[in-house]
Length: 404
Ligand code: CP3
Image 1 (cartoon, rainbow, N blue to C red):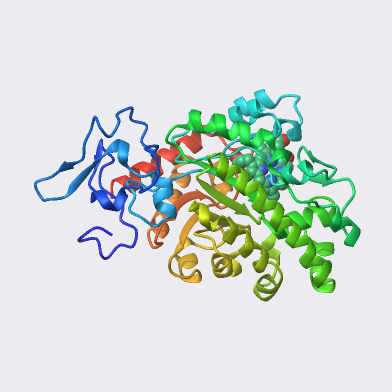
Image 2 (cartoon, helix red, strand yellow):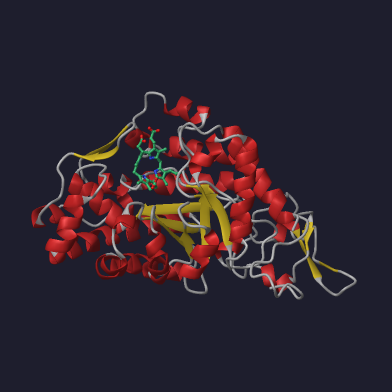
């Protein structure tokens, strides 16, 4: 925290000019190469740190830590970072164009398309992070589960898993099963330059639900029936899914992803007690397995207001919040030492701009009560969203937070 800023938990620096008024040691990333978020071509050697009259070291732009990684680590930021879940996807005409006629699962296995689609929103918006273009069911397909992603529906599993023999079909994932992920991330790291790439995997409850129900489900009833009624089978299933998530996340981080997000999108239907007993141990194992990589770990689910504290406890550094509870409320629900991500209702983006701007400012204000805040939506970008509005929201978040 900056001297004189003690009243604010997440200091946001005035001015995002060519240099940022931060004590050098506060922002230097010890072991990271000089690949921070500023796209300035200058190298640190060309623009050394300067000591100001007041004795503070002014950090050259090229040595600044990415605003996204800094916020995840609850460190000072030049502006509140922003990215959008599903920033790549049907809201973008260029996405619809490259995807034209190519099935989703095929696109997810082609390094050229993964790279192109991941880059599309980064070219359009001044977002502070990219998210790897893939899907939570890609590693399941990679180990031989017969599934497809049907447009307008989602993942559909040919032969749902409902017994021990089914669970045994889930073999461990090897890096060789997803060569396209490694190849695409290698290419992306070069193209992205200073913008960090977020890798991701599906959380154990959500993947279990797709596998057990055979497709999208409103009430997850067969899934919960197994969780309540066959706890040993459930634990074996989630153990295997956790191993698959760990392997898929390790592939992404080892290839160059600089943060990870575990999407347990549908876990919000589980009570806190059942979450603690039947889901948390598995999520916790996933986060622990990633600990040594020292990349921020984000955890998100929809409708998880009552689970936020536990999702932090599972080992996330950043807890994702949907739009149902304000961020200042979420702050009170998670332990100290966590950053928050969220939480503009994606449907707000379909309203007139003055409403979007007012609601964006509200999220920013509520986010200031958190130790670190990454601006995002409360769930994915809706296909009907105007990309121009996302561009304006990105700029508004940056301007508004940098000016404070
Ligand atoms: O930009 C990004 O966020 C990265 C790409 C991404 C996709 N899926 C691409 C995708 C990510 C992070 C996911 C994760 C994912 N997939 C989740 C967790 C996030 C969430 O939304 O809660 C879930 C639950 C899935 C399962 C899934 N895959 C659904 C529900 C759907 C939507 C079905 C539809 O057509 O409405 C998909 C398909 C999918 N995954 C699309 C994209 C861009 C749409 C495919 C298309 O273009 O037709």
